[in-house]
Structure formats: structure tokens, C-alpha cells
Image: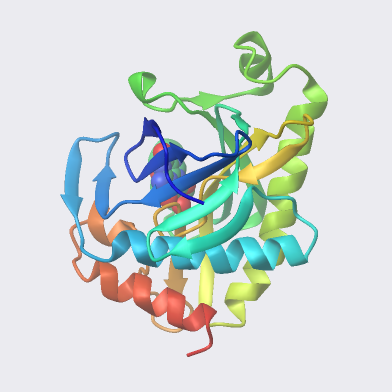
Length: 237
Ligand code: 5GP
């Protein structure tokens, strides 16, 4: 399958049509952005690492019964996947307080939460991805029914129930992550986008070292080394 038209260019990926109307290609870019695009950079090899990490994690989730858009990894920077109507809700799952949760509510950074927190952000760069409650999401018609919001929460918790112990076994704490969902041609809600250190926080279980995009957000350096280490642990290398 080959790339045809550029459908959309996002901050970390380009999306292309193919000869099959229901199949798209994502090209993973080396570009990095943070703080709603205010901080920008590029790291050679970052796109390929995210493509490989996402591929492995989509396979793990599919094997556990989570429907995803993943079809196959084509080459280092390209993934073949189903076409969906993206739901403009970022589903955030948190096991440990940090980032905006600690900033906004004053919860101590690093505090293990008494239960897994699931939040919704409005996927809207112009507005800076604000927090949403269920009523906001329904008023904005981001989904049609309350049932669909319940389903997003349920699926996000299932993903966490699979990935948290998966990473624990590899010496990584899954601190928090952002998921995106879409509706396929039959109206089924499936997991889309990517699952990588660009949208997950991983802390080394022994040292607490940050192994994710916070290395860029906080100017810590060593981003690709950290992403490589995440991939190597996934592959048990
Ligand atoms: P926070 O709300 O603390 O900034 O982020 C919580 C988690 O969701 C982090 O793992 C972060 O990487 C992810 N996340 C939240 N919003 C975005 C976003 O707009 N883009 C990406 N790539 N990740 C996000």
C-alpha cells in the first residue's frame, strides 16, 4: 500500500490516504512540541521509536481484546491503520499525580493516587485543550450519548489495567497517559492515534528517572536514549 494524498499534518504525525478508502497511513515525524506548540524541536529517530513502541503496544492491547485502528507497521516511520472519525476528546488516565494535576489542584508531585483517575480534555489547540465534564462533551456534541462517554472511560481503564502491570514487569511505572478514540465505519469506538513516550509518562521503578517527553518539556536532554530504553524494555532486550 502506498501514500496518496496528505490528508492532515499534525504536530507529531502526517496522515495520508491510500488506494483503500477505509485505510490510512500515519507518518511519525521527528518533531517535538510542548506547551501547546510554544516549545518546538526535533530529534532524529524519535518518530521511528514512537512508531515501533506504538506498534508493540497496539499488538499487546489487541491480544487482550481492545479494538484499535492498528493494521501493521510498514517501515520505520509509517503505520497502516483504519480510517475513523476521531472523537475530539483526549482521555487522560492517571495512576500517580504529576504534571497538570499537581499544578492545577496542588496534589503533591509523585503521590500515588488512591484510585485510577480518568479525565477528559477537549482536543482543541485554539482553546489549549481545556478540561471537560460529561455535560460539556454532550453540549459540544463531541459524542451523541452519555453511554459513549461511559464507554470511553471503561476502555481507558481497561487499557490501564493491561499496560500498568505490563510496564511494572519491565521496571517502569506507568504514571499517566493520554488516549484518543474514534468511530470506525460501523460506528464502533476503537482506540486510535499512538501510545508512546510522547503521550505517556514512564518513570523508572528503581531510580525514578523520567523516560518520556517530560525530558523535552523540562529540558532534561537524553530524549531519544530514554525512548530507546522504553522500546528495549518492551522488546525484553
Ligand atoms: P498533563 O495533563 O499532566 O499535562 O498530561 C497528562 C498525560 O497526558 C501525560 O502523559 C501527557 O503526555 C499526556 N497528554 C495530555 N495532553 C496531551 C497532548 O495534548 N498531547 C500529548 N502528546 N500528550 C498529552
